[in-house]
Image (cartoon, rainbow, N blue to C red; front, side, top):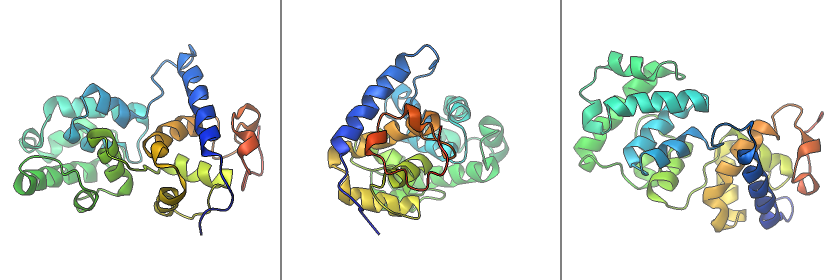
Length: 231
């Protein structure tokens, strides 16, 4: 499956960026509105290890939890070498209550070992090499490449997957399939921006169930695929 109609990406991105700017200025939006990994990347000056570690913690975890636990971990383990000085139990205590913290603690230790032994302590700036690391999928790899190395990539999470399908811009069954289609139909200049725009929009407006279509700034460009009830 693939593109189902001509999509006005320029108009969609422009409308979303205008909405995002207004949402961030709103007093009710007390945080930056950025996904936690983007916030970590900024605070740690795009350090690849910080981005990789926080992205791993972010999987199946709320942004606010990810941000706090990432900072706690990076304070004790700012490098792969420093992390290997910690026991599994110590790592678990630092990252709890992120989702699957037992598995993530073990993956972080294994990743740190591989980075030190194979890549001289440096996180690799390569999709295939990142995907070979324990617990690293395409979402994580794309986030590391875009946030830490400023490379082109499309990070597709549940929000990007849901909204692009709902728009009618594409038809796909999985986030991975969505990414592959977007690489063909989304202008490259929007690759790195689309995730940040759609995550916040998906959290506040284009929700999974009963989205706020009455508040939507791109409703005239949306096919509302599978939307049975809206507000």
